[in-house]
Length: 186
Image 1: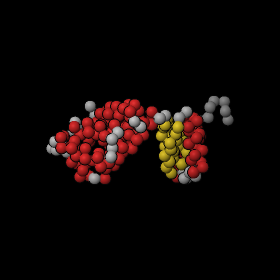
Image 2: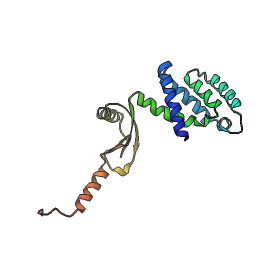
Image 3: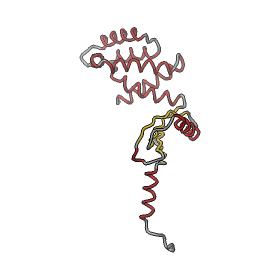
Image 4: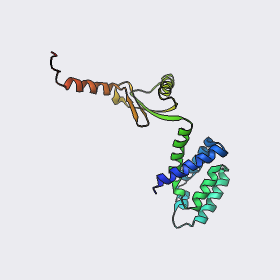
């Protein structure tokens, strides 16, 4: 089984438990805190994922880290289980997958919006509301600027792309002008 598939299984289980027993948003924060700790301390991450270090030692180290981070949510239990099974290398994928599942649970979708110029806060809020109405879900937006689209915007929501850029409209016009005239038209 791939690491992403394993992480997805653990993420689903964590979300289910967090919904029943605690706060799923707090579980995300706790998991992110642990993942950040590993990211900030490469030696620690190497030690916790190195195959030569016994799983019992990894579990003891994880317990100490959890005590320092004061994590007592279902995340702590899961991290100890991962340490015991020598699967702490899954933490980055687990966090990413958990965030996706949490957003699904909360009916939130991520929109990636590209504009030719930066959006003002008012225009960004208005666009976010329009996308929320169009999708029927709460929308969080991540914006980027790409002057090559000339004007308008491109919005990506999941696998759907709404391309309202001037560059795309010019390309369509170019294609139409390049087509031979239909029979009977001058």
